[in-house]
Amino acid sequence: MRPEQPTIVVDADACPVKTEIGETARRFAVRVLMVASHDHRLAPQDGVEVVQVDRSNQSVDLYIVNHIARGDIVITQDFGLACIAIGKGAIVLSPRGEQYSDENIDYLMERRHELAKRRRTGGRTRGPKAMSGADRDRFQQKLTKVLLNEQENHNV
Image (cartoon, rainbow, N blue to C red; front, side, top):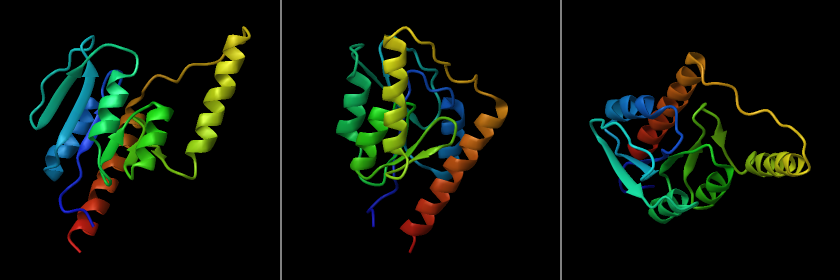
């Protein structure tokens, strides 16, 4: 059991649900740490701490990996970061509300590798669909469910 509530740690450079994270976290009085490179300006939100890091390739990921603890909630689209965070005992969600876990991360990493190989050989791949209102709602519902579950486990 964790001695304290989890922190929501956000890979914020390209995160499309920053507003939804702040709203949900405030309802649960949970700390939010948004990490972004200096290239991305983040709008201030109540109860959200922002950390700006160097713009080099993996600075955001390295900061997050070095500052998460077992039970924290990490929000990222990056499968590599998700894989490491799962290994450290974090709960990892995509901005579309998919929970990354030991059961699905290997498949996602393999799929990413196959698509990268296809692109290197001149093949085309589709990018992600645009975020919809339903995607945002699904994310907020999943984050709420995770926080409720953490609250129940913490109060046992």
